[in-house]
Length: 342
Ligand code: OGA
Ligand code: NI
Image (cartoon, rainbow, N blue to C red):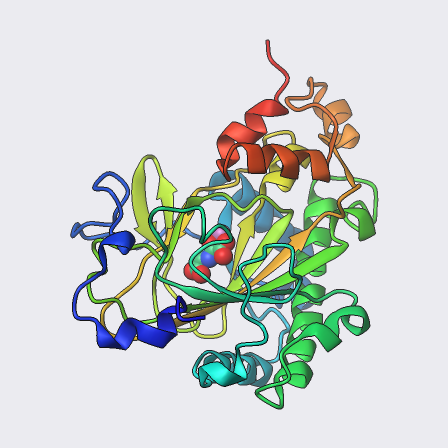
């Protein structure tokens, strides 16, 4: 519990040595340009305007960028604000209110932790505290969630339902655009939903530290709310670009399973989170994951339509996870295991 950044970080003026990343991976001092090519898609237009046009924008974004932002997405703005308020309140509670949730055991389903899942094994720690728990179906998991702040379960519960609907709406449009069989993403490929709340306190030396190291999301799709403090960066053509926070917009990020399903048509892009010295940053990540037994493969409809060969072999999501652990979270190396060579 003493390891939590919030327990000690305001008492230090310089970054402890075990938070200093090697030169080749630390952010350094160079200026990171904004990723101006990251599309901002107005989802309201799918209802009031040309649905097909919105679908084409989404497909193009998935292909060219792997990341996009959505506005007018149907998630109530007051609910987003209330959820962000609760998240801040949660991380700022005294330790005695959080101690029962803190654990070093990655198997614990609702878990407050610091840095990464492997705190005990890693030599350099990330500058973040996080809370992670399952959300779907809500009745099954809500009793594991924090009891404080008192409104946590109610407000965050509503948030997870609305964001689930949003993610299914986006996947439905992807399904329609790729001409997959209706309901392709129902249940098996989206049955697990995890909420990951991140707290990145002000950091004394942001150029040396990382909030989240470079990675690709290993799941189906991620819906991130990053409030109004920047810190999310994507790697494009070996250069880092910042994803600008827009009020009430969600960042949508294509996971590696969607790359496989699209037979490599969609990109799952590397990204990281950096810190800053001035203000705390809080983010709310919703991970939509396949069930462990879900069969993942390039969609047959796509292979037939384009008359092309599959780039990946069929596997179960748990096989991917196993390989992911063996490759210590190295996403590209993991995907190589499932690539069809030649
Ligand atoms: C993640 C992630 C970025 C952020 O949790 O997978 O990429 O800005 N987070 O919190
Ligand atoms: Ni991520």
